[in-house]
Image 1 (cartoon, rainbow, N blue to C red):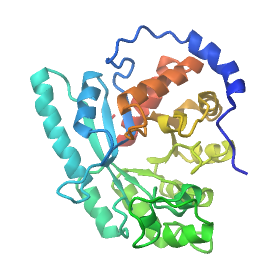
Image 2: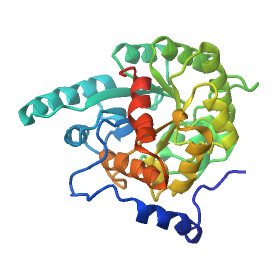
Image 3: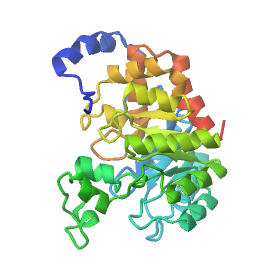
Image 4: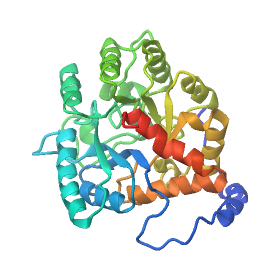
Length: 339
């Protein structure tokens, strides 16, 4: 049975009112974004139709953020080349920052194994790692689990389908035919994905589990534990795609996997109760978590504001400055290998 982290409004207001009335970090002067100094967002978006990467990097620099890891970014010359795209942003950013006499925020590229919606390959993975990507995401929007939960663009699911349409959630057997799934009929990690994990570990890059199901998560966790790999991350554990129980959160945390909560979960689109997020961090341990934005879509605030908000929510419910720094500065830097 899937859990619902969206506490009913009447119940939520009992815990939220004391928190928001008691949270007084200082006056905010828009458009300044306070309380994000040194923070590193390890999950932000800037592909077509989303927030502009350079504009975001400029605002992050003005706000004294430590860095941005782009999970997605616009194509370069029509090709999926995230490291090249981020390098271009970095070059423009440094030129601008020099003129403004500001310290530019760091920018890093992530690589989605199936982000180009083409068959993944070890050759492509090795190529992108060689270009300097800092993180690899396993299947996300075209994972069978995503198609089962929310459907997908019609043309992704049915060749020749409406490129602007969106399907209803698919039955599991149809979702399996259309999407990626990382374990075989015997419940074991498929050899391709085992090799992917080993290659990412060998390159000391970060590995995000994508929209993996619980059986996939357990198989991936067993392998990362066997390899002694400590840069694996599970995004938005309270989203409907992941829906991690406290028991599974503890299980993966115990083998060194980081749980990455996001503003996406807190947004009206998913509606997770921030008190539940706070309680989960307290239960499992602050040292096992990071906080990030997962922002980019126009229905969200921009990434810098999302980082302020998610930090603010956690502070309002009881996280102190040292704990917030651990989750948004120290641990992200360690995962990225820039500490």
